Length: 79
Length: 196
Image 1 (cartoon, rainbow over the protein chains, first blue to last red):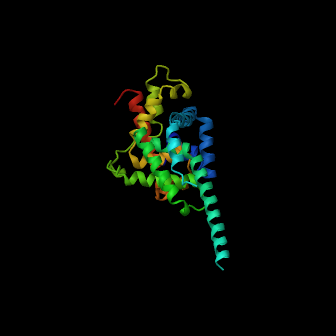
Image 2 (image 1 turned 45 degrees about the vertical axis):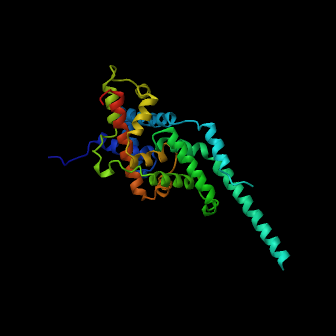
Image 3 (image 1 turned 90 degrees about the horizontal axis):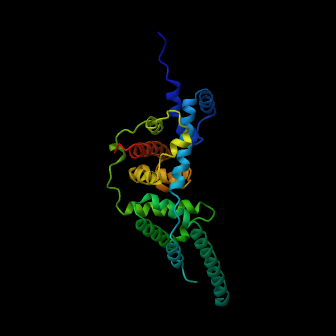
């Protein structure tokens, strides 16, 4: 019987976060890219994750209330 | 001679005043970014405003302990996260009590399954989520994970900065970040597919 082998898509899923955080080693990066080049299923999940991260960031952009800015300036040490 | 001593003292005081003014201006210049992080660390706008004010009051008092040339934004956030912890908001479940979260592809798979068109492109899939979904899901992530998630993914801090701000090892930052993102996706899946 053939030895146990990890499903390549499962492996690719495991390295998705470090891949997108750009902290994979060169060898791991090559391996992930080779898989992504031939696997549209993983590739679209990676693209989704990237757009999700951008969307999360965009949704959390919230202007600071101008009154707060004034209150902070008022905390400065008087000259 | 006392005249010379006075002059030396006056020069020293003038230099210190200049340094303090520069520090305060630099700190105020970062307030939008500090507020954005604070807003997602706590649940209400009022709490975030209080926290930011308290942070700046403390920063302005202890400005001498900041080493010029180091990361001021991280220094301010360290004060802010410490104040937030001091407020005793750590009464939630601890990380060890968290149920195991789903895998990283989980949210995509759930969203894809819930669309009629199984081949919907990934940009369209993200459009199924609303800002309320994101904000609500983020609030549902337990604090220990959320702190790291907010600092890295919203505040743009490096793993190293986040480790220093929260005073935890970098390995803990990485594991909490990875689990935090998965918990966020689980929360999002529950919201977006109506399975609460």
